Length: 201
Ligand code: 5GP
Image 1 (cartoon, rainbow, N blue to C red):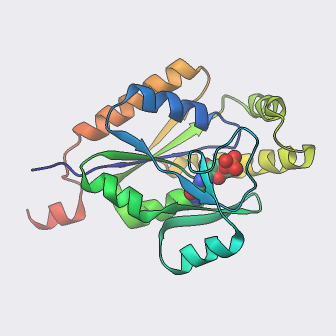
Image 2 (cartoon, rainbow, N blue to C red; image 1 turned 90 degrees about the vertical axis):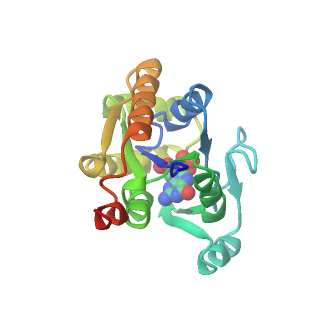
């Protein structure tokens, strides 16, 4: 029987290194695919449409949401973000896995919708000071936006407790090793905790 694909959700404060960690993980783990979100946020100079995000207007986003085309969506830092459902379902149906970078509201929706088929991982910066330095170094946000993101980070870190795993991103190599171990463990897990599996026993 073909295995069911899994969803790996990574959350963590903006500037916490999610993008880099995910890129490295994808290089090292086969049969793992990144979901490309839609967003109404303006494109940064370093980003490409269709690769980092699909950049859409507010109207296009609302249309997708109303059509039920999004597996989850949320308003984060004054913009809308969402995960197109069809590409995710397509990967899962092939028995392969998907990695999603979501804020905490999105992670909650994925847990509600996919239950234990989703593994929720919180990527924590070693300290708020680290985070401030990273956000300032990135130079993509205004000082006001940095302040907002740090404020949001405090709220987000408080949510780490209901995630399945917490990984501290102190050194890239170690963080990626830990994520790889989580993917391996989740792939080896039985389906015994699944609601429909329980009913058949
Ligand atoms: P950024 O604007 O820095 O790329 O992302 C801001 C935040 O939005 C990050 O925490 C990121 O994980 C989250 N995010 C990105 N795509 C999605 C999505 O499709 N849905 C949700 N809920 N959050 C997302």
